[in-house]
Length: 85
Image 1 (cartoon, rainbow, N blue to C red):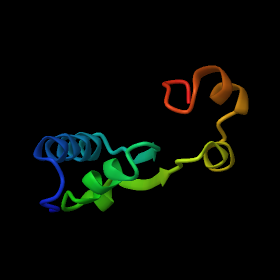
Image 2: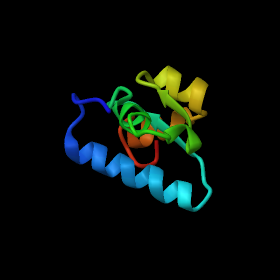
Image 3: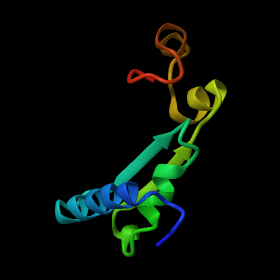
């Protein structure tokens, strides 16, 4: 496990992995301002490959639109850092 990650983040990541494994679900994440930190925390958990499918770090609006399919109207209306985006 990565000692550089905050312990509370590792605890939350472990819970995400364990609970999704128990329910037979896979996890995908899309990050922006976190710069891949969520993906790093999830993949730091041993056995996370059972659950973790993919992580996207889309920092620019162009990447959000082309990779994740976020509509430009959403970005213009709500901003890049919003629940809608």
